[in-house]
Length: 228
Ligand SMILES: [Zn+2]
Image (cartoon, rainbow, N blue to C red; front, side):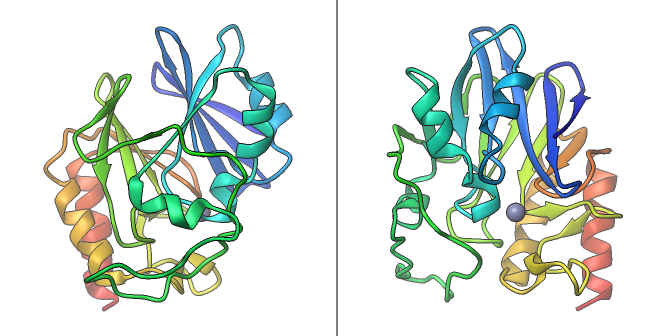
């Protein structure tokens, strides 16, 4: 697993050059944003040097973001598991993929579920330590992103990818599976909504961390409009 610092408070943990999760340092320990693929628990624990991991905060329930949740919940005493309320039925094993009123479906992408139970749900404008919760629908229902208000890092989950330029989910290269199962219109609206936040860099679920704020997000929106 490759480990790289992000700003003052974050660490990017990358497996297979493609799948990210992030450790964010708080006063009481680390918040782990997403839990990467299966069998990443040992390396995640080793990357959390000097401080305990206190909580796992999930952007969404796809397989490459929840793979090591159960292993970590089993190994770390008192670990909290935090997600959106909408994610809960999708997180259970087997998952309940039924749609709610007004939702467009079907729900796509690998959703194997987990055995662990969510210990806390969060809604938009909640804060988890230094992280502001922002609803970012488009990739999957209930998707959330987290803005570290100390240094302007947006942990965007799969709202964006950065395998090259910053790209809105659904507008990824043809070879990347995120393209197939996102609601492109909703994801574009979410990107526009994010223009109003004080973002200074974007840390995506897949790809490198990109420096920039409004102009970076706007470039992703402009490219999406060209590819409509
Ligand atoms: Zn992903």
